[in-house]
Length: 323
Image (cartoon, rainbow, N blue to C red; front, side):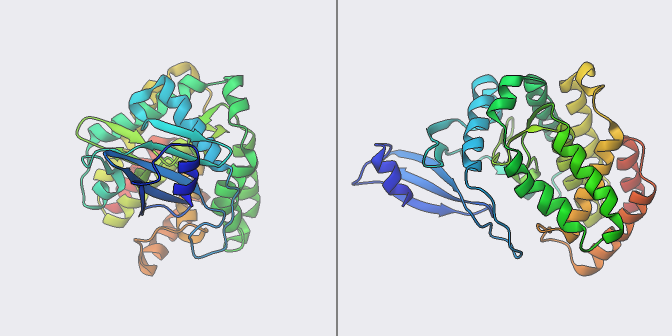
């Protein structure tokens, strides 16, 4: 099917092109396209995500992913793979196939490879993108994707927690409202280690189909909660150091005038609820057993009762807990 569309648009030949499925995501179909000497990637969104619980989302999110890659690629080309063909009507696009030296950061983290230089590079990239798009009405119009963000993030990560944690319903409802209305810049929406491809000297940000003009704290907390979860999982404070270097570099790149408009307590609260969502939401992490989940859940709930007042305190709290 994908080859048929590409052939209709004269992107590939009818005689030599092949499509090989690639793995790694739950929300889309991705293919390696080979056409004689050319190799590139084609991507299209799925209506039903490949997770255990029922989770549907509008496939037009592929359009917003195309726009993210184009917007960032035109202005900060070192941070994203090059988009080759943008077929918005078909909700399909192609992009460059990166060399084998690029590995997703999650795989490196899961084998204990903790580079503070990489963490700083990633923090700077996020800060640069947020600063570039800050309060830009044109970007807001281009990424007016509230419905998609609700389907892909607010409902599965936060609303779905209420059935398991009914006592937290008022706080969760307030958090959803705040995130939904705090619109300041272009948000990736899935800014996690698995979506950062890392080589010796560069990074590439991928899987930006949740792209949205919204709350910058969401992207920051999304990366922080992944790093802090791994600190708990491995019992290693090295991951806390990564979180701090990422956050420091983000602040520096964003700039003091923009950062002064963010509330650290909001980032802390988002990070804690994201941690809880990876245990009890629609998209739980795959590497935690039941005992470890119970241990981390107890820690999260104690933190929600008496949350840290700053990101630095949150990271220090995890560091002290894993020792």
